[in-house]
Length: 137
Ligand SMILES: [Zn+2]
Ligand SMILES: [Zn+2]
Image (cartoon, rainbow, N blue to C red; front, side):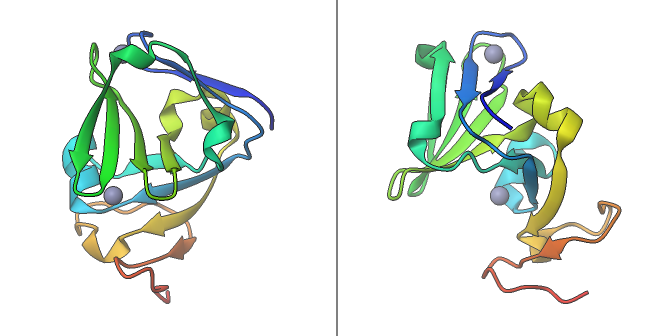
């Protein structure tokens, strides 16, 4: 899949990712759930050069969460990304991108040991705990 194009709810921010696959993962950590009212579904856009803030970069507010950055739209509040400046690694909100929603392959759950008991995703996939150790089914 090439050049997927996404936007926040209000459209102030538009993001293009070059040369991306359809791999989607989730994070059950308490911070992601508190910010997003549930486990956030993300894509890994690869190197920073793949991420193009096509419109509205000045509308992005960064919340500094210890050593990482969480970006959201200043107008509508949509979660945009998680970013680690140390290695310039992004996790991008998968739901910004219509092409991802239609073609996603959901195959990883992170911080699974922090998942509350009241919800679960159907189906089997790889699960890692907060120490990135695999949880055996
Ligand atoms: Zn917005
Ligand atoms: Zn998280």
